Each structure stands twice: as structure tokens, then as C-alpha cells.
Image (cartoon, rainbow, N blue to C red; front, side):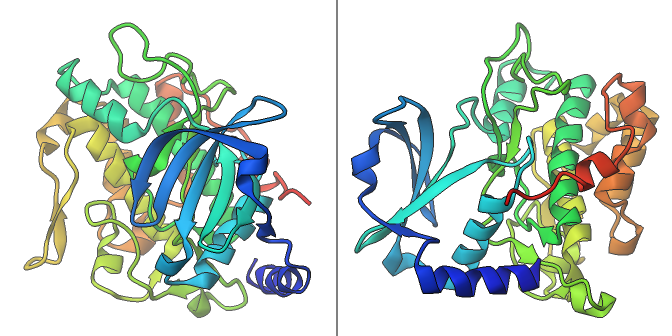
Amino acid sequence: VRGSFIAWRRAERVREAALVSDSVNHLYEFVALVGEGGFGKVYSARHRRTGEIVAIKIMPKDQLKDEEALQLEVFFLKLADHPNTVRYYEAFEDADNIFLVMEMCSGGSLSEYIKTAHETYGPGVSEEELARITVQMLQGVAYCHAHSVAHRDIKPQNLLFSCGQPGKGSAIPISCSGLGDAPLKLVDFGIAGVLRSDRPQKRLLTKCAGTVGFMAPEVREARPYDGRAADMFSIGAVMHNMISGLAPIWQSELGAYKFPGRIRWNSLSDDCQSLLEHLLHIEPELRPTAGEALQHPWFQAMGVPAPHDISVIFDRCFRT
């Protein structure tokens, strides 16, 4: 991927097609602000000709700290083609801002559903719902890793439901069946890392990136790390957040996380607890890969269909 990215970046600079210089307002009507953060703001918008509702991420140029990171995000979004990653449509720029036009995920974030599950329904996310959400996280991440990309900021806020309303007595959208509709989308590749494949030692990343509470210990301590293993820890941390309603807390004096609300693990099946313990292992090399995790017997026991042939995920080619 790294070599392809460099070649793509050079070509895009020559023909200036990565960010089309045009007025986004000519094609889209902005509807409402749906999110904001350090990167800028996200609006829902309507295509003036087709009526399609999209999400437009607006990033002020004077706040961009890493041009290559932005170009990498656009590169990956343009090429990625998987139901559990957000779909990119096009990009624009004007004198002040860069606009990324993407698929609209109208079902809300996993973070919002976790909060609702624990504050409104009390018991939180059920084990069956946990399995259906986790298998979709793993499928999206397996796809990224198969194409040498580590997300590096997996957290509930970066997992969005593409559509759906909560089912009766549940905080999770009723359409989240895991049976092909795949409404859970991994978003925000702004700090993704490219994994080199020529030599194992060069696959290690060094930038401390991510969100405390979901960042792997080796990343938090600024040690060289395998981005794939770090992503797997993050998935385990998201699972704990779904179970307990609380994020892991970093203990700098111990160089490790504590997991508030871990007593809730006791209500889960042994298979579920086994997967959690492996994902959250302090030693990165002892965590399962995304492909291995998808084959864990917990999913079969919960009646959640994971791919029988993991190559189905790996062989889903990038768009050309």
C-alpha cells in the first residue's frame, strides 16, 4: 500500500484531482451540523440533483497539521470497498477549507448507543448484541489490515450505524442483524498508519496516536508497535465499554489499564470472556489477529455468522 500511496500522491499532485477545486455549494445543500472535533466539523447535506443525503467533513486549511496524513486518509477512503468501512464519494477545496464528501451514517454512533443502553435500559448491551457489533468491527478491521492499513483510533465515537432505529427494549438498531445489512461503519482514517510489508521490523509504527482509554499500552508508552495488534486491543477496549458503560482507565504508575466495571464480565459466557482477555492481553504478540478473532467459537455459540472463509474479507479488492 505504501508504494501505491506514494505513486498515487505524485499523480494527484500533477493533475490536481485528489481535491477538486470547485464550490461544494454548487452541488450540495448543507442541512445540519451533525458533529465536530479537533479535525473540523461534519454536516449532513443534500445533493441538489439527486436528493441523496451525504456527510461532508469540513477541515480548515489553517488547522491542518499533517498534509500527508490527509492525503493518506483520502487515498484509503477512495479505494476502500467494504460494508463495514464508510464510503467516500468525492472531495473539494476552496481558499479556506477542504471538504470530504462521504456516506451519511444516520443511525448515530456506538458511543451514543452505549450511553443509552446503560442509562435507559439499565443492564446495558446484551451479550448477543455485543457479539453482533463485535463481528462487524472485526470484519472492517480485518479488511484494513489485509490491505496494510492500521486505523489507530478505534473507539465508540468512530463506529457509526449507517441506519436503523433501536429495537424494543434495546439500544442497538434493530437492523443490526449481522446478516448482510452491515450497518456498523468504521470512520475517520485521519491518523491511520501504513504498514510496510518488506521486512517485519519495518512494519512497526512509532507515532503515539489514538485516544486514551482505547489506545494500546505499547502505544501509550511510546514504544515501537505493530499497528494491527494495537487495533485489536482497541476492539477489546470497545467491547469492555459496551459491557460496563465505562472506558478503561490508564494507570501511568503501573503502565497498565484498569477496567472499571469489570465485574460485569462475570455475567458473560466463558467464550466471550476468553476473547476479551486475549484481545486485551498486555503482550501485543499474544493478541489474536482480526481474522483469528473472527473464527472464535463465541460467535458461533451466539448464533452470529462470521465468514466461514476469511479470505472473503481479504480478497474484496480495492476499487479501481
